[in-house]
Length: 532
Image (cartoon, rainbow, N blue to C red):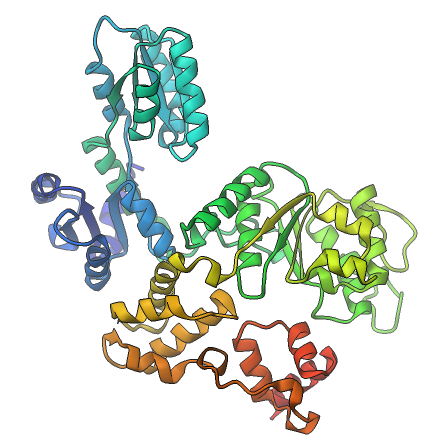
C-alpha cells in the first residue's frame, strides 16, 4: 500500500475524503496532521466533528462535499456502511501500534492475555513473535460482533489463570463478569493512518467504485455483500446471523419471503460469505420461462437434439455453476415434472443433458427461494414432498417490510443516496416523510419503496422532499384507491395495469393469478408493448 504512484497520479488531484472524528479532541488533532502531509492537499479533506451534531447530518455534509471516500471510527463506520452501501466507508480500527501500546499499559505483575481483533488477522504471524518475546501465552482472534465467541474466549482466559485481558470494548462486560482487569484497545493514530492509506489505495485502484465480482467464470457474478442489506432491526439481525452461520456450510438453503423482500440479494450475500465465493454464482427464475426451455437451461442438451439446437450442444446452468452456487428463484413455480429431475441431481450429484446418455458430475451448492407456502403446495399436490425436504435443510425467512418498520428510515436514506448518485441529483427527506413511510403497509416491500423513491428523485426539483411531494406519487395499493383487477374484463387488461402490479412488487406468476390469466398472456402483453 506504499506505492508512491498513488500520490503522483492525476486522480489524487481531484480526490476528496471526509473524516468524521469521534470527539472534538480528535478533530483538532487531525487538522495539523493534514497540514503537514505532502501526499494530499488538505483542501481535499473535510474533517467533521462527530460529537457536535447528529451523525446523519455529518454524513450529509460529507456527501455534499462530494466525498470519494469517508473515514469514521467504529461503530459509526459500520452504521454508515449499512445505510449507504454504495459509499466507500473505511473504518478506523485498532492497528498493531495501538495493540502494542495497550499491552504496555498492562500491569507488569499480572498474567496478561490478548484478544486480537479481526481487523488484524492478516498480521497474526508477526504478532505471535511479539507475544512470545513478551511472554504472553494466551491470545485469540475473534470478531467483535460474535458476542458468544467472545464470552467463551474470556472464560477460557480466566480458566488458564489470565488476570488482565487486552481487547476492544466488546469484551469489557465479559471480562468484568470473570473478574479480569480489562485493558482497553482503542484505535489511535495507527488506525487512522491505516484507514487513510486504505482510502487512497482503494480509490486509486478502483476509481469508479464498482464492486469486485465474486466470480468471472461464465460471465456470472454475485455483486451483493451482507452489508449491502440495510437493516439492524431484531428480525433482520437474526436473518444476517443465520446467513453467516449457514454460509460456511455446503447444505441447501431455502429462502422464503414475499416478492420484493430481497431474496436474491440475500442469496448473493450468502454466496460471497462462502468458500465458493470465487466460483460462479448462477441464478434462474423457475417461474418465468416455459417448462421445455427451463429444462434445457438447467441441464443443457446435446447437438441435434431438436430443431434449432446448436451443433455442438449447450451447457446447462448446473455445468456453468460447477464449483459454485446455483440460485433457483421462485422454486415453487417449477413444473412438477422437472422437480423429479432436480431431486435426482441433489441426491446423486450428476446431471444428464437432454438427448445425452452420459452422466456429468457436478459440484454445485443449491440456494432456492420462493414466495409460496411450499408445505401447502405439497398438500395440494403441486410440489414434491421429498424435494421440499431436500431444499429446506437450512431455512431462512426474510420478514416483510412492515414487520421491520424500524429499518424503513435507513432503507429510505440508502435508496435516496443510490438514486441521487445515479441521476446526478441531491435530496434530503424531511423527518415527517420518513415517519409517514414507516406508517405505510408496503405490500410490495422494499421493491415498492424503491420504486416510490426513484420517482421522487426524478420528479422533485427542490433539495428537500416533503410530504406534499410524496402523497401524489404513491401507487394505488398504498393510497387505498386500487381497483380490483379480478373484477376486470380481459379486454380491460392493459400493459399499464400489469406494470402497476409489477411496481407493487408482484411477480409474473402473481400478476397472472391476480388477473385471472396465464403467464404467457402476461408475457404477450409485455411483448406487444415493446413492439408498440
